[in-house]
Length: 219
Image (cartoon, rainbow, N blue to C red; front, side):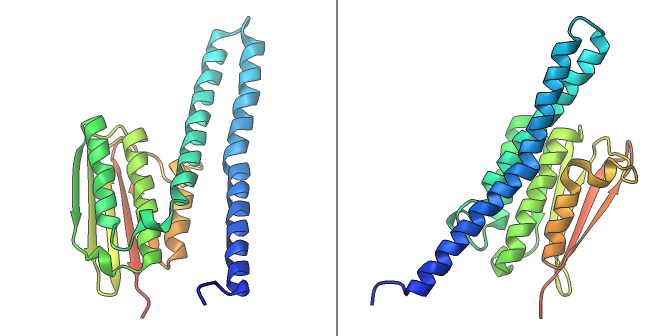
């Protein structure tokens, strides 16, 4: 009676296999391509050593950017696959506070975080995707925006919840081809869309960046 039915064991094993396959696909599509690009650019640098110094500096800068992207992708994959014990229900506010405290200590940022919702009442899927989306937004602001202040607000709405993440950094042109997927915005939008929500971006060069998220709860 203490043993699990064979069917349940089979389903668990299939789930494990599918997850491993997903991770492999993600590593191939999101990390190996970046590392391959780094390899080719390193070779290009080697061939240009006797030549133009300016061109070499540009290649090295691109290599640094691609390595940073690869590190970020690997870190995200590892974080996303934490056990359910690390993503306990109702832990959203606590985990965001921990993230912000770490960044405050490292960067000296002025960080303002207010949570006006009961995170214990959030559906698990919403809590998970909202956490990873906001975490990505915080990381982007700390690493790339050249901001000195970051404000995060979580609030209730008539039929769900909302989040607003705002910095006073340099901003960027969201209408440009690069801006449309600036530092993983496409992935952030996909996460929020997956749980039925919307993510809006407001930014311009020299104007800082504001991300607004609205998520309705199912009836």
